[in-house]
Amino acid sequence: MDVLACPENYLFERYRFTSQSIIYIHNLIHPYISNTTNCSHALTSQQILCVALRFFANGSFLYNVGDAEHLSKAMQGVCLALKRLLPICVFFPGHKPVRAIKEEFHRIAGFPSVIGCIDGTHIPITAPSHNEADYVNRKSIHSINVQIICDAAYIISNVEAKWPGPVHDARIYRESNLSNRLQRGAFDGLLGDRGYPCEPRLLTPYPDPEPGPQQNFHAGSLQDKSPGGDDHRPCLRHLRVTPERACDIIVACVVLHNIATIRGEQHPALQIEDADDDPIHLPAIQDGRTRIVRPRLDILSFPEEYLFERYRFSSNTIIYLNHILRPYITNLTHRGRALTSEQTLSIALRCFANGSFLYNIGDAEHIGKATVCRAVRKVSLALKRLLPVMVVFPGHKPVRNIKEEFHRIAGLPNVMGCVDGTQIPITAPEENEADYVNRKSFHSINVQVCDLPS
Image (tube, rainbow, N blue to C red; front, side, top):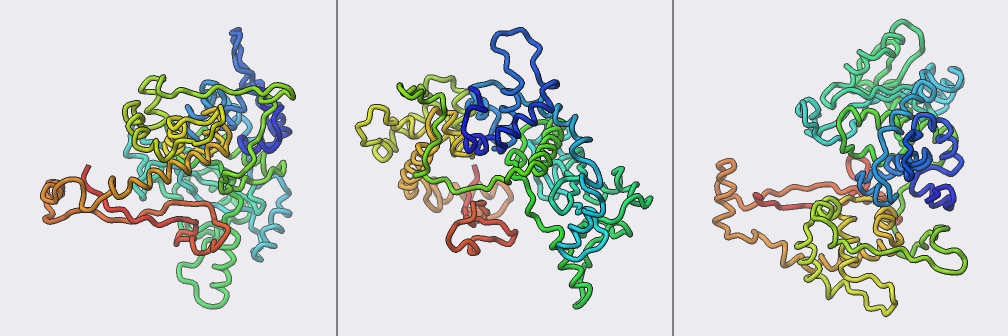
């Protein structure tokens, strides 16, 4: 597939870059990612770049990206090639004159002599096989603690991506080369939060600001450090790779962020998927005379390992679910290419299993995004019908057995369940948007769940 032959909205939706920017990045790194093999079906450097950009853009499992691109995994080479660009794309104090950077910060909140905002962010990773406990942060998740400094235009001027999650922000800053340069007076000041020490070249908010100048300082520092330039690279929501490779991917995303910001690429906004959206028709689908129909997949013909990796169920369980849900998800249309109930179910299960964008599921399953949206909706409503049967209190076991299981865990008598709430992030709704903003300032549904011992 020639990616650059596709429409611009198709490219941006899947790769987060326009065709001109893809060509620009390709020109920068193609000497480092070109295949030297003589195999007849070796990937071109452009194909390798597009596979990696698709992963960075949507954060799906690597097999999902491979299925959508009809290619195998091709990631590490692009990460290392982008890492080579770090000294060119990311340097302190920035790409603009120092005076211009200070003026931009001054216009935001009136702070003088500020050349950057510093903060740490935790990038979740899969638990590594070696030294697993070293990566568990204070929120009990495995992560890499990344220190980032950016200017007023959200261009990143410094990154430290090598420290395990438990390492404190202050230690990362203290042991960085930039800290020594600031202490020697090489540059003016940074703004940080209370996780950093207050120093002549690093200003932090007052712990308990008093009315007047201290409160003004506090409000101004929050305004200067307010988020808004996040590049929304969904792959950083959770990296399922080793810590070393995770650090490479983080650095690659930082380089891509700066390229996108400097070239004026729009930050991708998450949109509510709508079944009425017009699908994007690729040049390969129609040639003006004959419609080219892509083959549909018979998922039950694949090995069990393939099924579980993509759908989280074995073939027998998929057949069982299809038997239960078939009356509610069968298409009543008489069109020749209508989805079977089994295909409709498999599309929804793939969405539930990996949480990818709908267009990514559609590309992998050889259907349009609107069809994916309708299938997910139909299966969700069908599964909702099973709620009174599948979810009952106090449970499917006798009450006495449930109490005994809890007692064996911690010796607590007469316990029939554990209750808790969990926040499920959602896209900001068009109506009553403020009603869904939780105490951590993101939109969510607060779900109460009562659980039993497994």
